[in-house]
Image (tube, rainbow, N blue to C red; front, side):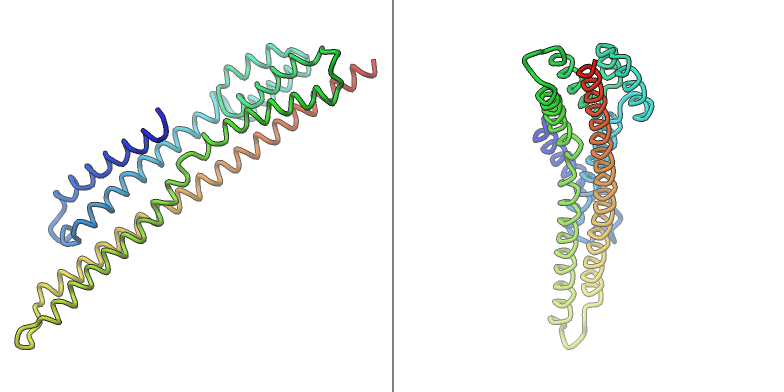
Length: 246
């Protein structure tokens, strides 16, 4: 599914769900006004994006542990079994496997090309790895901006609801007939302010925690890909040096 379509579907479903849940809320929560429905919609969007990130990053890890996979690839490459290494990558089916497979396939194509010297062959291999990495990174970082944006919007939306509630509260005191304050209107305004404050803070806290969690996961994943790619390239360079010396 395309990213734009996914976001539109999540937005529409979140808004529909938000207003549906709002209509079933206890009266004291409904006093928060329609802003509460929007805050609920943001919560639904947070849940959707968090689940999408968890699924995507789990898929990006592949079918086996990264350590076991990389050890198997290195052992296969040391035997100069490039087809076997590619097969291992295809079986792993993860972001790291995709990047390493691109480098292995490219090196296997140019390793016997006498028109290229060692440096050129390494440049071609490195270029293939970088191109594959450029395709994988956006998938790993997708929707992280959405999580950060939702956290920011939730804070502002909660503040908006708080301000509206306080306006209602002050109106209750400003329009008091005969100096008697309408306690019910005052309480309703304060309740609206507090409910929206709580909703905005809840979404902001969850959004910030989720954003930082996934950013750390992606950074760790990118570091692993860079380290593994470097090891593979160094292995190829060692093979080239041995070939040149023999």
